[in-house]
Amino acid sequence: MSTLDNVLQLQQPLKDGGIRNVNFFNGRLLTGKDLAREQQAHRQADARLGLAIGDGVAFGLEAARDPDLDQANAPVLRVRAGLAINRAGATLRLNADTSVALTRRFDGEDGGDCQCVFAQCNPMADGVYVAGAGVYVLTIAPAQSSEGRAPSNGLDPSNVRCNTDATVEAVQFRLLAINPLRFADLDPSSPLFRNRLAYRCFGIEAREASGFDPWRVDPPSYGLVDELREGALSDCEVPIALIYWTSAGINFVDTWAVRRKLLEPDALSGFSFQRNPLDPAELSSFAFLARARRLVEAQAMCAQFQQQLADLLAASAAPTVLAAKQHFRYLPPFGVVPLQSMPLRGFDDSQFFAGIPRRPAPGSGQSTPFIDVRQLGAVQQQALAHAPGDLDQNELLWVWRPWQNVQAYREGRPVQLMLAFASGQLPQVAVARWDMARLDYSNFDSCCGAL
Image (cartoon, rainbow, N blue to C red; front, side, top):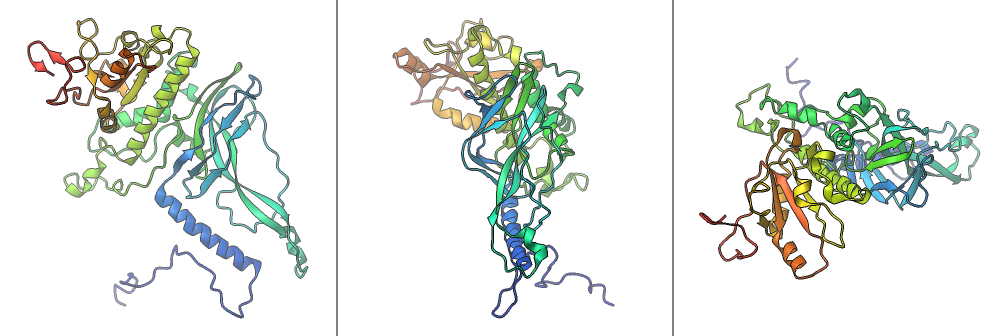
């Protein structure tokens, strides 16, 4: 026997894993099973497309407390309409804004034992549905329901239970408990708790550990959400919010700690430096490279910061006395801070960044440098490739004032003053340029001219 007898040849069909469509022809006797097979084939094709697009939230599905229905002992969230794709490649569509009660489990009608429709994601692992204080992840998941009855010829009495008119591919919300208190440094009474918890979800320890050895790659999973996938969280679910629930009601709803935009598969992440670390074809595996997941997480970090900052501003009676170090251990690679500009509420420049190294340093006699607002988009994109900042490490943070924003305020326009900041790993970008510099809105040095 030739050694090539069991080797796939060029242009030889490989049927393993192929989609099997029912072949229709005149005279064929069709049964309900045949049509169900055809439905299953279409679902498999759609799922492959979903896997290529990637899992996460396509749009919408933001969750927040429902201001009309939320109560301390019966919390209710309002989830906006949206679309998500789960790790199985299935789409999850919430057609309209929906109020979701967190205190009771929906007991649907008995659907019987009918397995007429392909149900890849059922059953899912049990989650926590009963009211109680703790930290939870709210997910959106697939669900099935039946509608109506279809007429039957009665030839097979055993299939009467399957004579539903339609099977609805719907969605459901699930609440899954996590236990952050197993970490000694997570104290719910600390004002840093929300930020520290969010960065546990981002897997900050694993990300930092991978940098100790540049030849290593990121672990296949890291962070609290990935830990949930080892048990209660199914690949058929998409996380949309992190909820901290106390005896006084919902303390906060942090969307972006667990919510992610669509993450397409990374074709460059399969190489391993265990084979040949000097092969240029494998350079994509370096742990410090900003691959697809890292970039998606960086965007989530920026959005999480802005959401927490907005909640902090709304809850504080005197935001001008608040400092970033009081509420944030980690800062995203890029962010925007609203400043107090009456009648608009905001933070104070020097107070918010107190204790954080920046250039020029506070008290040096120089004001916060200007930047052209048209640069901010490029600065943000560059910053996303960098790691978040750890304020305990006293690393430099770039802070700028968009000169257009300052000019509009000085002209009496009703604008909110703002600061932009970015990781100190970026080069200085607030540079006055020929034909673009402004005498009163650029940065100059008495010895060196325009900086």
